[in-house]
Length: 55
Image 1 (spheres, helix red, strand yellow):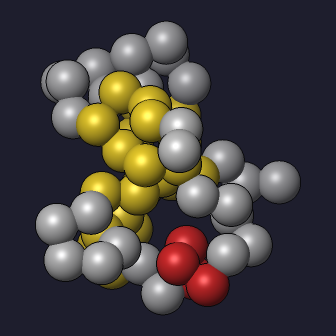
Image 2 (spheres, one colour):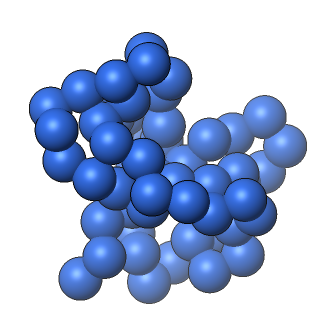
């Protein structure tokens, strides 16, 4: 399992952009990560923050 960290310290589990989990995510928004890259992030299963890079 890969984890990415946002500028504010929040951690996100990385999922594939084409996955069911990404397609069904709630509260989807762009998030700038600690390394300056922008990922799409949202809420997966209750209590799980997820992020993915678009293809």
